Length: 279
Image (cartoon, rainbow, N blue to C red; front, side, top):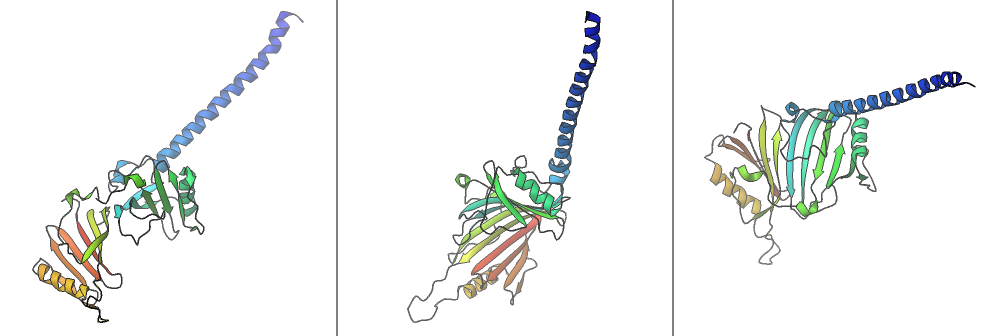
């Protein structure tokens, strides 16, 4: 076979190899483009949608899947020994985000399940929730399929736990402490309602002094004592009201709506203060 014939036979082979290489790289670019598109459409959240997300939430590590709106975001500090976190811990800090999503329940849960480096397996798992580990965080994602609402909790590592809420630097001290109760939990949040609100919440466990003189009768009705004390203290505040059946006291002060609920059934006092984000 002469040289010219050899070259003629090599030309189709070279063309085939070239076509293969071209299609390979074209498909690779297409896959990259699709992946990037999915990131933009499904994960990376534009700033307008993040107005109600607390600064400090680890959005890069735990995105908000197919986000359309944040309803609320809060940071919790748990310190009541009777309360166990979603990861079976006492004393914990976590972010809680309630959001509206374009994802269906299965899409939402599958996304976070695939995001987990390791799944947190429970003996009796909920079909509406997945739990797992993302970097240093423990994460829960829930979607109850009744509407388009998703729920994300991001728990901080145990070594980063603090009893001091890092968002309480602007805390409005509108409710007096008392030796008859101790704090069990608090939270700070941003609420996407009424033009945007900040919320400070706390609950206190009322201490039962019990039968001090050993006569078989509880010596002090702590709730009655506390209610009367705070009635006298706050009765002159603007818009003060007390609802006796529910034992709820409300008033307004320095731009905040204050609500104090005395719950005998729980043995607790619940405090909630809400004000405009423009404050």
